[in-house]
Image 1 (cartoon, rainbow, N blue to C red):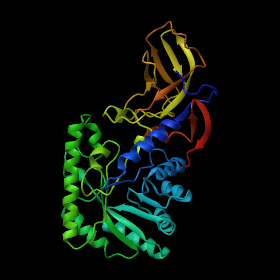
Image 2: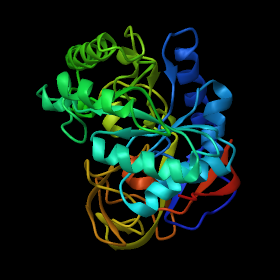
Image 3: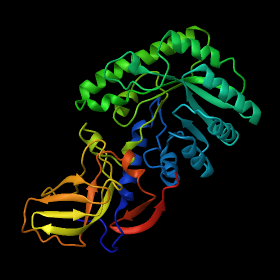
Image 4: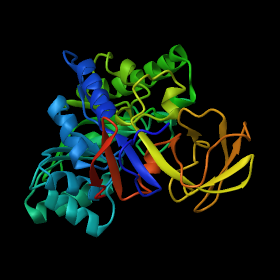
Length: 361
């Protein structure tokens, strides 16, 4: 029932089966070995330099971050090739970005020229150089694709790229596009079709930019849901898969078959009735933005409600011998929004606690 066999951990805690995570890391690295596209894993999933270094050691070309704070933490740990796959706005963040550009090979996403000018100004004051990728909003043209940040594909992206190329202390490197909403398509062929359409739009934009006289060296896109489509697609240079390290129910339902390595360890704190138990993992310990978690290897238990500090479970067999103090493992439906609720991992190897690993960002 429980991975930890010799040490009782305080709960609720993030429990990481490091052997399963390492197998996931090796497997994804093996997939990209020999491919024209490289793996640039997104570390917003785990927020851990320890795991990022394992990914790089296995073959990743660098990492992707969501925030300047993540990027700073990773650079401090020795990572020297970083993409921040978001727009950086605000004087303080721009100053930090320009400073970071002196310490590592850094690129950021941009979708408007005014923000690019701000980055250029900050980098010029710091005498640093920052790479920029034009963030292309594929969802502005395609139904079913994430409609979020980004300039429209085609002529607007070409115009922006040419303006970026004229700014000081920044370097236009290429394009970034994300088709994130494809996780709504559980069938592989349906997912493949929409990803191919999205990539077609991105490559058409690349061709237009190159026809205008600029060199496009980077096409950065994709995620765990689409790695085995994007990774095979001509023109893609790097893939931002991240969830594969831990896996979660969102991706498992799509047939992405990496191992589940991350669970939330919780303790039974009350059994008010034979058919009900209360655990100490609630909304502050595990996210429900994509649905309620399940209990690992215990289908007779149904988690049906979370309060701030408590989880409510039904027991199919009221004669169960589960008692106060027993520990259970919950399977997150969405690991991204669960990890950010914790400040450390309990690292388990062969059933024993190996170390407590802090989450610094």
